[in-house]
Amino acid sequence: MKICRFGAGRYGVVKGDTVIDITAVVDRLVPLTRVPFRGDPVVAKLAEIRAAIQDGRAVDGLPALPLATVDLLSPVASPSKLPSAPKNYHAHVQEMEADTNRPRREGPSLDIEEAGLFLKANSALVGPSEGVTLRFPDRRNDHEVELVAIIGRPASNVAEGDALSHVAGYTIGLDMTLRGKEDRSFRKSIDGYAVAGPWMVTADEIADPNDLKLSLSVNGETRQSIDTGNMILNVAKLIAFGSRFYTLLPGDLLFTGTGKGVGSVKPGDVMVAHCSGIGSMSVKVNGYA
Image 1 (cartoon, rainbow, N blue to C red):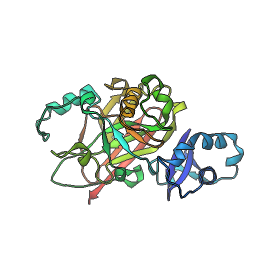
Image 2 (cartoon, rainbow, N blue to C red):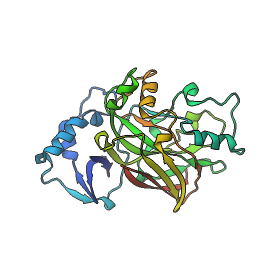
Image 3 (cartoon, one colour):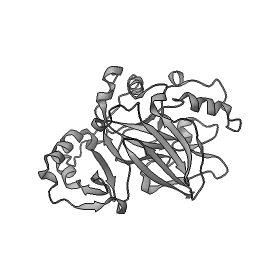
Image 4 (cartoon, rainbow, N blue to C red):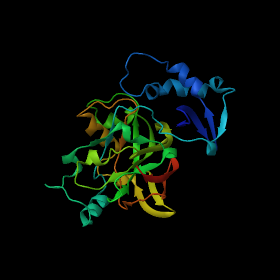
């Protein structure tokens, strides 16, 4: 099932070229509460929402909109965090080391198991329709296309063999990056530098997240072509690794790392990211903030 958010925070199910507005179903099953909730309450209730939709009667008479007419937001409204994997493809590590123009930080370059995951700020999260507004015109702003795993239930110190059972679904991510010597999380947490979309494909429809094809083009030119089977730490290992340090909560977006082909973008560019089993999203690069 493909579940999207669109417009003014509405929820939909994508079927072909149509979006069925299921906001009424979500509102009925996820009532507003004054009690703080750890994680995204809609993702936490996903099983009940899907059951209601699959029953059929709950969606009878709901509005249906052409997909081309809706503004797609991030498929998750309120993740508690955006954990992200650095240097998770050997080809990208080699690409980075070979780039003599890349600013270098002091100290040794650590691999992913030594460096651990990093966090992008929640405030960086946008959907494809919002586009990316750049900052620092005198510095490189790069694209990094990634598979994103959406956590469905709390995961704390989970075993690798059980890790994928904690996944609600998958989406495409753009880990936009400002190059520089500042801390990685700082440079990657600029407003709009975490794009997720175009929707969430529920985990039951992705037989193996480590057997997907990712690609990214800029203005029609292919920049990145990635096989998720080439990850250093696969999706299950990343979840197990991250959950050793902090609890992954419903709605958390786990960015799994990018492959080679990273390059810079400028205002007016149009990035198209695609992932087999998920679909495609078009993201415009806006001007500078």
